[in-house]
Image (cartoon, rainbow, N blue to C red):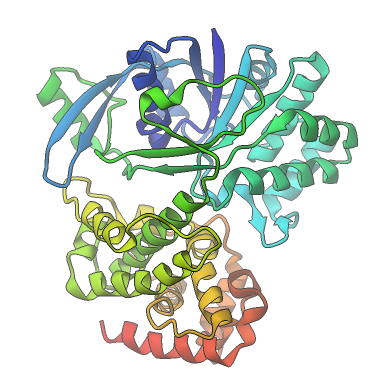
Length: 457
């Protein structure tokens, strides 16, 4: 058997990557073993429950029309219990039969700025110190430092490191971050070994997966007769696109519906800018108008118009690229908004709003900057920084109806924006969000006009 080690066994991994491995096995591809583990202890109760059930669980999928389907997922072969030294995780990652290490750590978990790794982030500073002392950390870089060190010393051979997060050019950018981390550690030999032996294909993932609540368990029991504490749910739609860029062997994912391509760029640009960008639009606007769920936000004609106006500025940017998209982008937009309207998912505004800074930088800012550079108007896209500003001001005043979590946000800088005499100008001048473009009068005036539209909600 050949092993895939997955780091970050959360709901999305279990509804997406593990489900594809399940399909692969059903098609006859049984050569690959899937082992999962985490680098933090925050999900240990859920993982213990999953391990106690033999790593088996029920996946409920629901279409926008309300069609429910129940599938027993048995593709995770082992859950590695968390320990602070990550000893067992490192051992599995270093084995010669482990050919792929995949991970879902969220967009903010990569600590990437415009120039690469954000070495000033407290988590990275801490993990650099741990790595210099020969100990693993709790970021993906700190954990992989320890795994790759053990792998290089044991002569276990080349490895594919597969990001499964919504990050533009996720494989390329992760590789830059990883090599930058290893250089900062001062381990030039490991950096050289990794550069020669680790491949990092780009990928695009797509499946809306809300946090499961007790109602999922109740529906599963009613439909299947199983009382499954690890049951979860997602939408029926699923897509996975992976670049053909592997260090060694890989599963024949094509037989499970995965699109294996030479370039992920056309797929990821459409998905990140249209789906993820409009998702954030609806989360911020939903929070400002008292909505608890994304389907409530998209069913409001005013908020639906905000998302549509934003996408109207995205579409010409995508068609202007060196590789124009064959995809029908207006149709794709409509399909995305229909998926968001799925009342059965009860996907929370809180979940989608988390890590808004990283999402704005990755999903939204490129469209605004490209429209600025082209001298084109961006009245639709300018709604996004306006919504983010009003959302942050609600957070600053303690007026959000939920706890807001943002691992990529500099809290002091965000509060300074909210407290500034001219918050619009302060937001635009934030280098993390807009780089050098923040001083352009066209940006500030467009955002100021968009704030007036937001305030009319």
